[in-house]
Structures are given as structure tokens and as C-alpha cells.
Image (cartoon, rainbow, N blue to C red; front, side, top):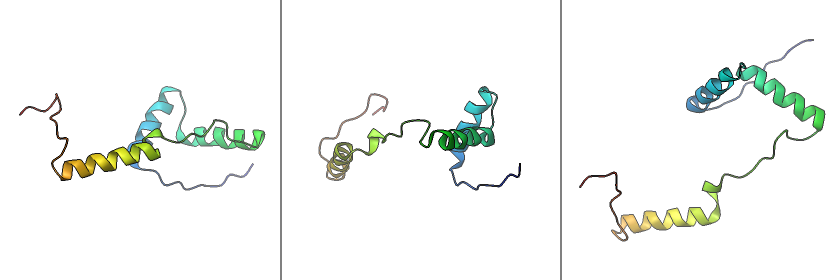
Length: 85
């Protein structure tokens, strides 16, 4: 069977973390991607349920924007327990 190459852009930190996790399972990235694609083809769907990251939810984004505005205007400022004054 002939093989082809697929080029994927991914940040180095994520790639390193994935390589370590896969190595712990006795796999490499190429094998994991092949497993994913074979399951995709076999089942005609994702082999997992894609979900949104709750960090990017509309309510969290609004909260973060408000916190940023408050910080820029010196409102609602508190010192975190890990920060020494």
C-alpha cells in the first residue's frame, strides 16, 4: 500500500506533550493520527465527541473583558495569596 504525507501545523509545546503521552502508550504521533483517520473513515464520523473549550464561552469572555477593564481602571483589585506584598 502506498503512503502519503500530511503536514500539520501545531505548536511545539502541544506536540511535545502529545509525544510524551503517546510514548507512555507505546505509540507515536504518526500511529495516533493513522488510528484517528482509520476510525473516521470506518465510522464516517469523529471517533470522539468534539466539544467547545468552556474557557472561550461567551460568559467567560465577558467576565475576562470586565476584569481587564477593572484592572486597567484600578477597580476591584485584590492581591492573590501567592503574591507577597
